[in-house]
Length: 272
Ligand code: ADP
Ligand code: MG
Image 1 (cartoon, helix red, strand yellow):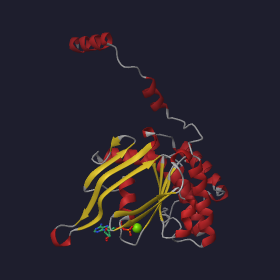
Image 2 (spheres, rainbow, N blue to C red):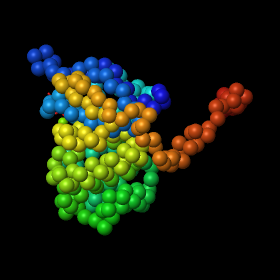
Image 3 (cartoon, helix red, strand yellow):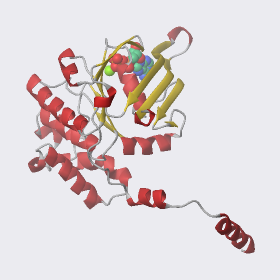
Image 4 (cartoon, protein in one colour):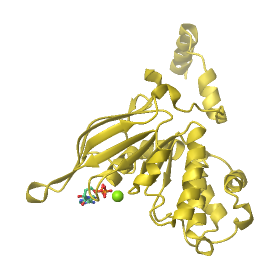
């Protein structure tokens, strides 16, 4: 079962300020997340929910503690590596959509692919098929303000999944939406979850917890309650084999260098 562990947080602490102004957004926070979980995080304003998501999303760093992602401690890796990991593995959805106002939605959705090594044409093609999934293909050249809130959030979801990330993080994604649009957005997230993706979502709306496989209540930077509503063995499994980029395939196929070849390579270097 241990290969199903996606994230381990151990003793995670986030401190703001020093001395008199010292406060803790997270205190000795421990959490293990399995692949395929749909976790909803609730709790009063200021209890550390956004701080937690930002640290998991590699947008922020803890003051202390371990963050193990896919078996690798990523808490203290360089910011450059964090950005690269973030672009590859993590998709974000925010309460206020965070779309770039003067870019057509097609280009907004294509943005996370800038780090992918694809050509611009390929990036726009991928973005276009992501928008199609959300029935927005006819609006590709609209600017964000020309869409309703619900549509903008669906654009943001398309942007979050365009690079095929393993983890979707959503910070109150329905907070600015009416109940009908909230429902549409939740149904999209449900479908994405059923495809085997891991979702961690912050919400104030207890009615939405029906979508979750686990509900965590936070209080003062710690876990207050943690309830699983779906057994681990019933979590969805990924249904599609992810297409690896060429570079990764080569890396996987590369055999360890033989003793002989290493020796001759060294000899040649010395000759030069
Ligand atoms: P939530 O998302 O649950 O409302 P946050 O994670 O945003 O809570 O904030 C947790 C605590 O950390 C709050 O007390 C907040 O005031 C504090 N905090 C967050 N960001 C900063 C910051 N940049 N500087 C100082 N304090 C902060
Ligand atoms: Mg918040």
